[in-house]
Amino acid sequence: MASRITETLVKSLPSPERGNRITYDTELKGFGARVTAAGAKSFILNYRIAARERRYTIGSYPEWSATAARKEAEGLKRRIDLGEDPMAKRCEERETPTVADLCALYEERHLPKKRPSSQRDDRVFIRNVILPRWGREKVTAIRHADIEALHREVSARTPYRANRLVALLSKMFSLAVKWELIKENPVTGIERNPERMRTRYLSGNELRRLQGALDAYSNQQTANAIRLLLLTGARRMEVLSATWDQFDLEAGIWIKPAASVKQAREHRVPLSAASLDLLTTMRSSSQGRWLFPGKVTGKPLGDIKKAWASICRQAGIENIRLHDLRHSFASYLASAGHSLPVIGALLGHTQAQTTHRYAHLLDEALRSATERVGSIFANDAE
Image (cartoon, rainbow, N blue to C red; front, side, top):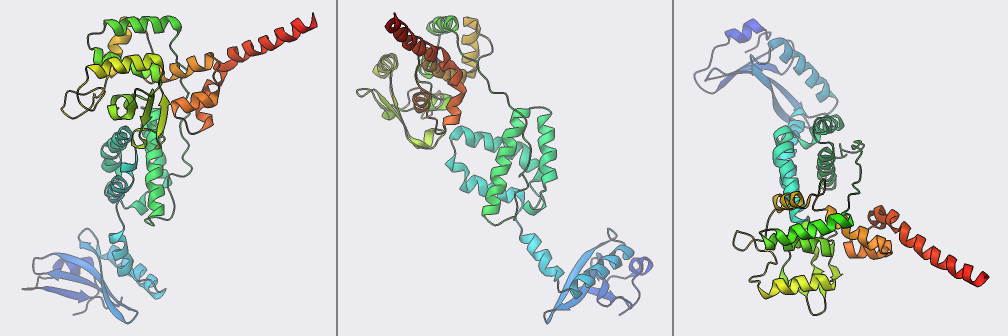
């Protein structure tokens, strides 16, 4: 059955009793209108390529008009004449993974390599931002402009968090390139928001007030966790997730396993006498594997930010985070004249530039050293 495919013709096409019936166009070879027994109508194009007969469904009627379908069929035939197989391309596109597929691969293959806290942060971004926005999109469909637009949106609310999101996307799409899902990383070239490095340290007076507030705090387990943060310069989760088998109290060593530290390599830390006194006292009344067991059986203590805020209010200390205790630890070392490599080793830094932020704190110790040398020369000259 052949007729010129027009809007009027398609509207009037009757449904067959069973199966489907195709009416072919008299002008454009292979172009036709198909009607099913259920009354569904669509436009198709039959073509031959590499000695194979193929049938390509252009789209459904009335979503596609007869005029638009004809124009699409003409374009398809031009591509076929150049050797392209539209059906093969469509099948390839259907097999192309979505962003949701990439997220699943990332969570399966890469996320377990990261610290628990980083895993949680990544999952929040994936669940709350990436999947709702692009989950159904093909990974090949995400463009640089899409990443840039998302970065701008999040930056308007939380600039630093927007940078963390872009870092996650960059890693995910970098892995997609490695896994041969895409050819180029669309995140490349995204300009991050400037970040001002915090330089907040506890002053001597603040330290004394903090010690008093810790002594007075009702929950001494939490107070001890904060004391250990201050005495060791460790990261919050390193302390809260610490187990007794990591400590050799006789040798005075804390051996942090690779899985629990940011640098992903074992970190041996010598403990001060004050740290050992604290740990020995804690050990005498401790039960179980955790230094700081949580309310849930078999789990360590969770978030202590609320407790920290309460203690800071009691001590009259403002604008300081738990992580600033780590900075304070480093600042005391620098002010005492210890070198940047020593400070970096105690903090577990793997890159010298990370420790360089404390370089200016060495000034007084270095000045004192030069004064001693100067006084020697001055005395010799007299």
